[in-house]
Image (cartoon, rainbow, N blue to C red):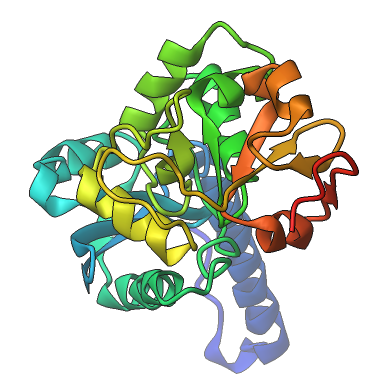
Length: 269
């Protein structure tokens, strides 16, 4: 039988090297385990309640951006949480909700771009068509509206206005993906998932003088998606062109603010 090592033969350098080798093996094992678990580890979504002038909202933020925002009095809260649980591990984080609430209040106070800078996450959106529509909708600036047909045409599917309506009704990120800026082809404001009164409040905050059932206002001007020219509603150019190619601004200043030029025929003020 092999004799045990004589204590007098203890070699500190050798033992330290052995310990270092073990630590290195453990480090490599941990790294390999982390790589193996990465594909199945679920991201975290942080939840919070917002008290706002629009009522109580439930907000959820993922590592990629705001992933859900819903009006709690519409009974969608449980449905949204169930959808989030399929993709995320949920944790409560009031601080995330506070930041989003501040942006919403700033938006209602007239800072039209207050909600435009926050990254969003469309993980809860069901189809590629809906993601295209919501992504394009986010380019419709404050102080303007587009029709359901116009939004459908803008994403290359002009006959899909009913599908656009469904997309707006199921939008998981109202305010940040501004479905309140989508109206009916006759110029009336149409429906809204959070209720018509909230839609009116959001449009008024962006400069539109509208009431329930009214059209978008007497000072509105029509901007053309392609020519980048805006006109009075009575201009011959507006009557000749297809409605689906127009975006409606609350006034000339908002149209000019996004780089559109005034029509030389009707000279909108």
